[in-house]
Amino acid sequence: MQVKETQNEGLKRGYEFTLPAADLAAQVEAKLKEAQPEVEMKGFRKGKVPMAMLKKQFGQRVLGDAMQEAIDAALRGHLETSGDRPALQPKVEMVDGENWKEGDDVVVTVAYETLPAIPDADLSGVELERLVVEASDEQVTEALENLAKNAQSFEDRKKGTKSKDGDQVVIDFKGMVDGEAFDGGTAEDYPLVLGSNSFIPGFEAQLVGAKAGDEVKVEVKFPEDYGHPTLAGKDAVFETTVKAVKAPKAAELDDELAKKFGADDLEALKTQIRGRLEAEYKGASRQILKRALLDKLDGLVKFDLPESLVEAEAGQIAHQLWHEENPDDHGHNHGEIEPTDEHKSLAERRVRLGLLLAEIGQKAEITVSDQEMTQAVLNQARQYPGQERQFFEFIQQNPQAQQQLRAPIFEDKVVDHIVDGAKVADKTVTKEELEKAIEALDTL
Image 1 (spheres, rainbow, N blue to C red):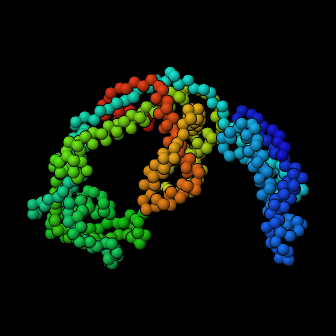
Image 2 (cartoon, one colour):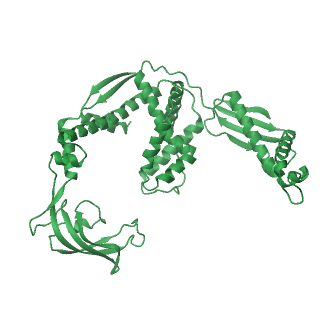
C-alpha cells in the first residue's frame, strides 16, 4: 500500500492510499487457497474445486473483503506510525468509485482531523472556595413535618360538612361516554384526595363543596393524549355518589412515625434526616465547586480545536435546547436546527475542557472500574421499570452507549483528582445562599 499526503493544515490531514492491483490479486488468491480445502461444489470432491471455479463463484465477494481489509490495515498502520488520533471516524472514499474495475489499482482518499497536542496545565496554583451548609434544627423539623404530612390519615368530618381541597372523599362512580359505560370507568368506595390531580383534569374540582350523600354528575373531557386511544379527546360523564368526606390529619411526631420510615425512634429519624439534608447540600456545593474549577481550567491553557468536534457539539447543544423549549415535540421531524454563535461558543468551551480533562486523567492514570460501570448501568436501568433486561442487553451490545455512561464518571474522577491537589477554602453559608449560588449557575 502506497501512502501520499495530500493535506496538512492545522489539525486537518488528508492522504491518498494506493493498493496496487497485483497486491490485491495476490491477497484474493491467498484467501481462495486458504478456503479451497473446505469448499464443496457439485461435480467435485471436497477440496478439489479448481481455482478458476472458485474465482468465478466467490471471487467478487473475496475481492471486496480483501480490499476492505487492506484499506483498514493501511489506515491502522498509518495512525500507529504517525501517532495521529482522529477526532472523529476518518472519512474514507474510493476515488474511481463505480468506475473501478478489476485489474485496476485501488485508490482511496482518507481525511480526518487529528486531536491536538494538549499543553501541560499547571494546576499547582488553582484556588477554590467550597460552600458548606449545616442542616439547622428548623430545617430538620420542617422535613420531619413533611414526612408526617405524607404519612397523614383521614378522619370523618362532621355530618353535612362541605368538602374542600386537601380533603379525602370516598366515592362510588360510573363513567359513560356517548351514554355507554366503558371499561375501567366504574369503582366503589374509592378514596380520592381533592387537589391531588390524580384523576382526569376537572374531575376533582367538581367535587369540592360536595357533602356526604350528595350525587354529582361530573362532566369532563379526556385529554387528547390520553393513554387509551378509544377515550382520548372524548367527553365523559361520571355519575358520582359521595359516601364520606374526611379531613386530613398529620401523623404525630413520635417514635411510631419514625418506625414507619425505618428508624428505631424519633431521634434516630432526625439524625437520618439531618444526614440526608447535608448530603443534598454537599451535592449542590460540589456543582458550584466544579463550575468554578472548569472556569479556571478554561482559561488555563489554549490549543487548536478540531472543527468537526465543535460542529458536532454545537449541533447537539442546539438540538437539546430546542427540545427543552418544545417539550411536547418528542420526535425528530422538526427539520434542521441551525446552531447559533452562542451554541458554537459553548461547544468550543465543552470540547476544550473535555480534551483537557481527558489529558489530565490519562496522565494521572485515572480509569473507570468495572464496578463503577456496573453501578452506573444499574442506576440507569431503574429508569426503565420492567425493561431492565433489555436495557442491559442494549448497553452490552452498544459501545457508544457504554461510553456515554463512562464519560461522566471519568470526568468526575478527574475533577476530584484536581480538587484534591488544589487549595480549597471552606466557607460556611446558609441554605438560602447556597440556593442562590445554584440558581446563578443557570445564568452564567
